[in-house]
Image 1 (tube, rainbow, N blue to C red):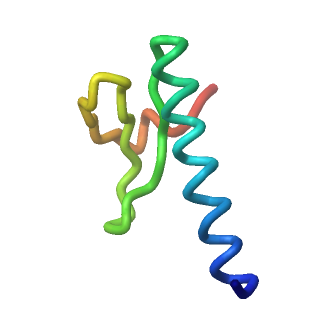
Image 2 (image 1 turned 180 degrees about the vertical axis):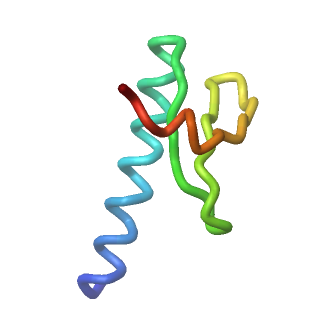
Image 3 (image 1 turned 45 degrees about the vertical axis):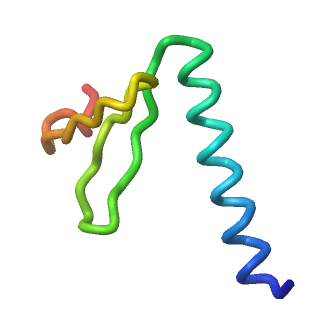
Length: 58
């Protein structure tokens, strides 16, 4: 494999691990979709779009 393929594989594995951790802890993961939206994905498969206000913590 080349570096780009290796990096893509590690990114996918990291996301898979995050989903497993979220399921084990009853939480969710946050990621940016290919359309540029941020979403929360819960361990039950529910996906919730996030508002811009949700991204900023004060």
